[in-house]
Length: 423
Image 1 (cartoon, one colour):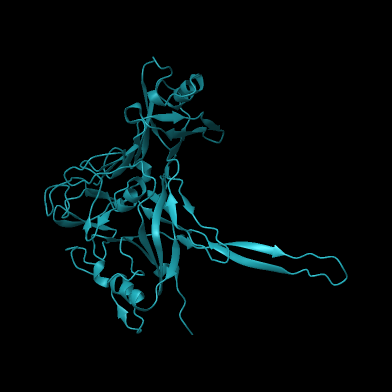
Image 2: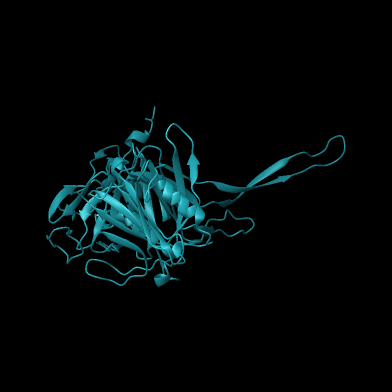
């Protein structure tokens, strides 16, 4: 009897290399292929659009048949969750640099899944051939606006019509699936105070394909597992040199200043949030710093896919387009009295008669607290909704907010700046 395939033994990889398209095993390197240390509950699915044609006639022996046709393969949908882990690679430098905060490639890569963030917010692919090309800049910073190339940072444009396409590999124990032309649509960062900070990634692709024959053996040679012949291969990742061929970059380690270091977890219990809000356009800025009981951040490209509707053909998606960029967040904190406490913040928001106050309001979500490790999301123009009171043993309030383009970058993005630091 064939063995069962277990989620516990599954792994997920992100790469610019198309094995199903015939790429050689040596094409995969730690500069273009990365592992994602996913948590339980990841998913990948592909469905079909159908059409039912029914017959309904009169008479004593009517034709009451039904026929179903598969008319199109819908875009592949996938989602996965990983820990948000700072790496310490926060400085752009020349390649092979060993200064503080640098990486051997010279690119700033301040979080373990830097390539996912880049695929979501930038038109610059995380890799070109066998060389990685990060758009994160010195200071461990990623901005959602157009930026020019700098030392250790590539140029980036965030107002793009089509997203960067790469490939996701789901190694489900001994069965390997490839999501071809995979795009990253959105990310949700959750900072529940009893948890470790996580990011939930979601996206789509054109086709979900099981790798068989030579492409499967090529995948096993890189990811590890059982070859078609039945023999086993260990994963061929070299975390120290990160330069061997037929390998991938691990998720939990990073070459920092010439030494392999373990990426940090973030303890959400230390998280806080900083709000700035003027009650009137000409009013005085008031700063509020809250300890939170729950905190989240969400970025969504609202992508759509195009699929033909030709008769007599099983149609497949031919491309994708980005929609309106949506950057939102929410926070929950206890209701406290005081001039710069949550009750005063609630009072000022409720008393603000303006329909739009984002020009004089901003927020900084500091996940992990002010001391590293942390990841902070700075929203320079923030529209607050009216808060919601929750009457429980300890009274609390929740507020949702939307990041908007600041006046200085109107039409050019700039809804959020992300900063990361490792302890």
